[in-house]
Length: 385
Image 1 (cartoon, rainbow, N blue to C red):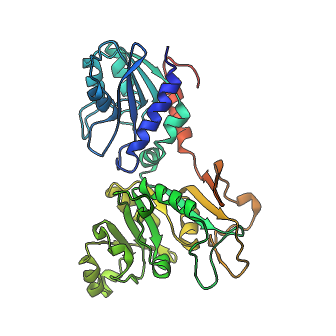
Image 2 (cartoon, helix red, strand yellow; image 1 turned 120 degrees about the vertical axis):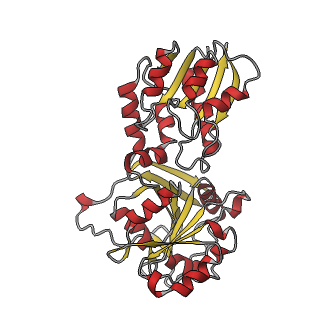
Image 3 (tube, rainbow, N blue to C red; image 1 turned 90 degrees about the vertical axis):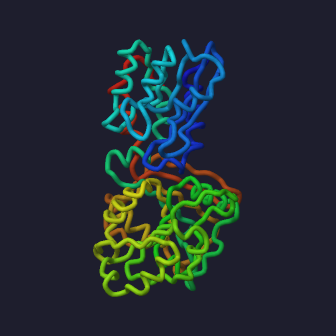
C-alpha cells in the first residue's frame, strides 16, 4: 500500500511549480491514486486558473470513481475565481481524500472537509503537515495580517559588510550564490530595494542567470523621487516597475513624475513615517496588486526598517569568506537594540554550503505553526506525522 506521507510530499513538490504565479492564492499540489497507482497529477498553475485538485482530475486518463485524492491544502468549498472543488470531487466519485493541512482562510477553514464528509467521502487530515504548511506561509500571512510576506536577502562578508568604503560590492559572493539568489527572485512576486541601491548599483532586478521568462515586479522605495528615467530597471518590462514616493512629490515634481510614467512604470504616492516611507502604506498597496511574496534586496537601512517594524518574515543571508573591516558598509542599520535580551532571534535555522560561500536561512516568524495548530484542531481521522 502506498505511504500517504510519501505521496503528500510528492504533492508538496508538485505545488512548488506554481510558486510565484498564484498571487493571492496559495500554492497547492494534488495527486489521484487508484489501486496503488498514480493516475493523475496537478498543481495550481496561475491565479484564477483551475485549482490543483481539478488539474489532477483532468490529468486522469481513466475513471476516478473509487480513487483516492491527495492534496496539500483542504479543498475549497466556496465560489471564488473558480467553482468549489469539493463539488467536483464528490461528482467524480472519489472515495477518500487525504489532506495535508487545513485552509487558514476563514471562508473555507474546515468547511471543505465538512462538505466532503456529509457527502459520503472519507477524509483524513494531517499528512506531511510541516511541509504542506511551509509552502503556504506567504498565503497564511496574507490571511492573518493582510500583508505581503517579506524575505530579506543579504550578501555579506564574514564581518557583516555588504560593500567596501567606496560603495563597491561586485562581487562579495561567488557565481553559485548569485545563481541561487536569482532562483529566489524567480519564485518571488516582487523584488524590493531602496533608491540608494538603485543609484549605487543600477541593478536590473531580474532573474537573468536562470534565463527564465519570469518577471517579478521591481519595487523601489524612493521618498524624494531621486530615480532617473534612465535607470536600468526601466530597460526591460518597465510596466512591472513600481516606485513608491512621498505624497508631497505629487505637488512638487509633476514633470519628473510624468517623465517616469512615460516609461510605463507606476508611481504610487505614499505617506512618510519617521525618516522614510510608511511601510504599512506600502504593504497595503502591494496587496491591492496581488503582490504577496516580496524579496527585499536593499541596503542596511531598508533591511533594518522592515525588521524594526516587525514586517520581515524570513532572511536569506549569503556569507562569503571575505573580510572588509570597520571601513566597510554594514549589512544592517540601527535596530535601536541596547540590551541582549531584546535581540531579534530567528527560528528554523538552516545552513547550506554553496561552493565558496554559505547560505543561512531563518524565520522571524513561523506562520506554518499557526496553520499546523489549526489543522490539529480540525482534523478528524489521522495519525501524527
